[in-house]
Length: 296
Ligand SMILES: CC(C)(COP(=O)(O)OP(=O)(O)OC[C@H]1O[C@@H](n2cnc3c(N)ncnc32)[C@H](O)[C@@H]1OP(=O)(O)O)[C@@H](O)C(=O)NCCC(=O)NCCS
Image (tube, rainbow, N blue to C red; front, side, top):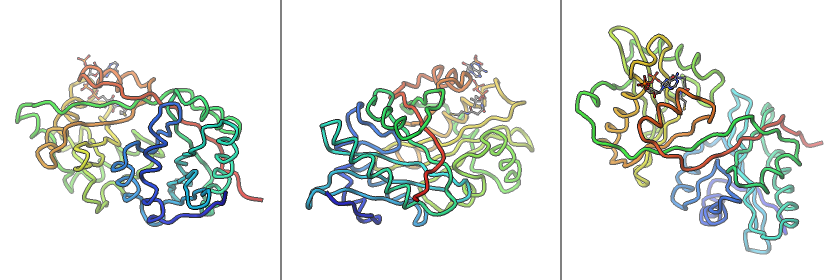
């Protein structure tokens, strides 16, 4: 068995391997997709200086892989793995540990916090995280989906692309609603990635809420990264309008059929809103965190 560091092409070559070994809920790494096309799109979307990867090979055969996506400004990395083929739990643990050690070593200086993210049914992975000093977040994260319904035209027209005059308001609202989020407001506004979208709802001269995310035309699906409504505008239907309006607009623009998002199980307003709109829960997941372990 030998370990190799991978560039993007190396990871893409293992797209099928990742999808195949990430399909069973008992081994599912929630920060990676479980369909080959979705994995490839995910990997293609990583910025050049935003990810690292390593793999284990048994001769020419892939035996495992670990990826990490990081943000230098937030000093955080989202570890995407371990994906290990071995069925035997002891062999699985040994290889997963070697890959974890390697991926942490590969992270650039300044990345201090690391996170793992697993399906709640993946008990082997949860044990692995604890054995390596990670602590589970006290709440689950739910992956939820909405089939895009047909809505009135007026609802679709209520959401618009962020106007220039509301950029400062948007930055204030995003930072107040999601402090320390994995996307800063500048990054959201300045993104040139054609897959990214951002819509807002305005009340006269001010911003009442926003919704943003990315779209996969091939998967006919949009993912919501953030949905936020100004406190004074809550409970007036703005959140529902943003979700339904964005879904409808994205269907018109990109042909999407469903909208997906992740929400904390303890976030009653958001879970209440999604339940009211008829969203279904696809998966319950758990994040594990700790300080990065530096190589000695
Ligand atoms: C979640 C959020 C976007 C909801 O926005 P909103 O504009 O208040 O939502 P709506 O007015 O459209 O709410 C529609 C339904 O959602 C549910 N809901 C909204 N707020 C709720 C609350 N505080 N408690 C329980 N249910 C709530 C209700 O079913 C409500 O219908 P009702 O008013 O007829 O009872 C808003 O609370 C928010 O910005 N929260 C902080 C950021 C966040 O958590 N975003 C979601 C991350 S995934």
